[in-house]
Length: 351
Ligand code: SAH
Ligand code: SF4
Image (tube, helix red, strand yellow):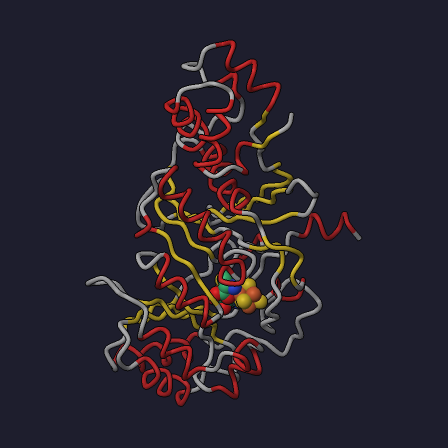
């Protein structure tokens, strides 16, 4: 046992390998085995000398997430429950691309639980359990890639459990590994935030090419603060200012997620206010009809608006020239849809 290679940065691994008296290219080989060929043991690294592999076995290991449970939805969405080394658990969701066969979007967790307590979100009910380490974020990509083998992950979104910008450094390191070591394009990765303004500025500085999504969910401070307490600290005006200042390459846009809650944020006026708010920002709006929560802690007060109301809301945005898409909720029947993740296995087993 000993050192978990996945905890090492590329530089740390190079130092470790050099200390064993090996040439630098050996470190590169090992990195490729772990992050490109998804090896989980030194045994598999057949281009390393046998003696070296045996030495590695004595001093190091390669950790893996333990798959506790997998659920498959009728629409093909797959939800994976993974156990971390300290027995906490997290969920990752694999969503099939509706237009391209065998292509998937992988939805990653950045924290176990979440501190922000948005009233409609199941993860928010857990509170923050803990931040994930970079390797635990990357391991979700590795573990799911190993499970699905052939079909390919074309997009990665940080829209699972947790607020990525509240775990900034680890998310940044994970982005670096997923792109540099695994070879995934940063242009196909989206970080979604409930609006942690300093985090948005930092992201603009450290990872300007990543796609930014904002969970907006309301068009007035009053409503937003009611359903997303984080708005009291980071209100709309400043949030939208940060969005305006986020660097956008040509043809890029910021995605605004808007969970439609019947009677709360779905009025015509809300749509018109939203149009005003987004003026001057290259934006795309994802309208997400509220997914009724499978937990008793969320009151039945929250409902999905009727289909007509959703279309009306969409039309107001469209007429104002804003791209607005009604997001079909994938995986709702297995509680894998937006906002439904709660790592229920661990909850049941820890209580
Ligand atoms: N914490 C980050 C990343 C998680 S993304 C963020 O909030 O952006 C989770 C997404 O699911 C958010 O856009 C959130 O608004 C949405 N969501 C949460 N609960 C939901 C529910 N019950 N129905 C529909 N969408 C929900
Ligand atoms: Fe946290 Fe995002 Fe859920 Fe809000 S919507 S509680 S920020 S995970």
